[in-house]
Image 1 (cartoon, rainbow, N blue to C red):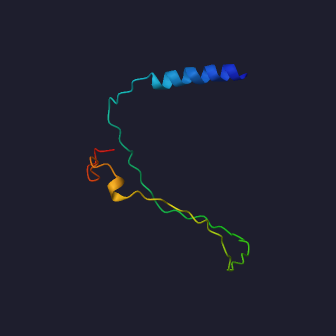
Image 2: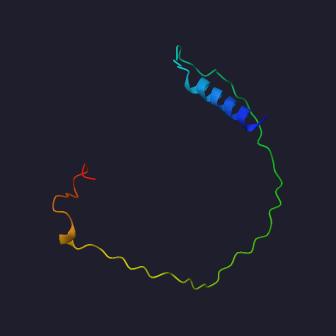
Image 3: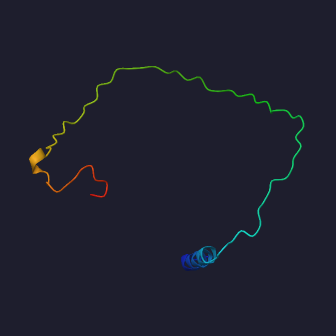
Length: 86
């Protein structure tokens, strides 16, 4: 099946799925079920041996300079407490 045929089939399937209007006409219900006894399965697991240790490592962290605006640089019309103000 070439790519064009696959795309056409996908387009047709998506139109079918999203083109349907489904309305529930009757409520569903779970069946009554009686459960008696049972047994959990047993497993024999051979896990690998894992040696976990610690070591000291020095990590170089970049120095980042952030220039924050001064309070008087902010727009006076901007109300930071107003959730409608973007």
